[in-house]
Image (cartoon, rainbow, N blue to C red; front, top):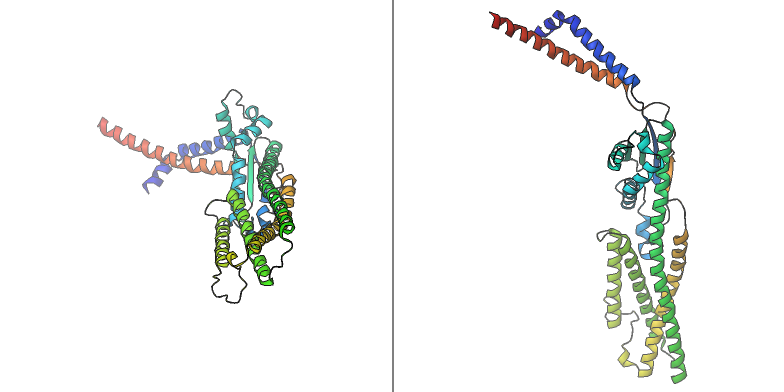
Length: 374
């Protein structure tokens, strides 16, 4: 009640103070520089991953969608990479230079660090709940705001494509090296078979031995495939990545099976053809079996690595978009700031509070002054 009495007592001063505070704030909002926001939205493109062609990882990779949700492994990594590129100093400097931001911000005499800080405060990058990434740019020119946002996305796609192609080049070189070694090994083994036949004549190998050799050669070929898969995954993922862990487990399991078959101890498989110990065969048969086994392994590996090598070459030169633009940035129809209504509300509330404080302080000052005079 006392506060209401004070307001009634000084109502003219109080009203004029609040009125002029709101009026001045409104005028300031009307004459201040207007800013416009343009927003673009993107998603990672579902381009086929080189690892998805590897039989050992195919089922895993297919189950991981890059845009399922923020928690999905591949998608999250991709969006994080996008954000890192967009926030990089290299791209920021390029945009500032391209659009002459220093002049637009009237900061031509300022250090680059100050210009960059001011510019980045008007760039918003957010990952939405749906899994898409949005980039918004605030600028005093509605047209320039849209152009900057679209330029960001254009350069993001170009830089990301360059990074992707660089990784594809490394994969191609790795596969090419293994492919050439495979051809060299086959050529060497075929010559060895020819020399053997010339020296001893063609030797008839028992069907059981041939069958077992083919079986173990398939295991060896699968092991080499697993080793290639693991080597590529090792270059592409962190040590705790489930794809890398799965590849390592498969490689270890194949090695264990090969050890069991070579030793003749396959648990729970009494009727399975296993490789015959070489010391039980004549020396010449033993030599032929070794050559024959290695040649079968190399043939099986060639069958696997040839299409892989061709795909690696295609991936290296492919230049498809790495992202999908859901919404292209367009010039805004309305200003984004200053928000006049919010300014007026803040001015009204703050002027009321300050006015009440001034009234109470004035009344208190008058009382103290009167006591002093008495």
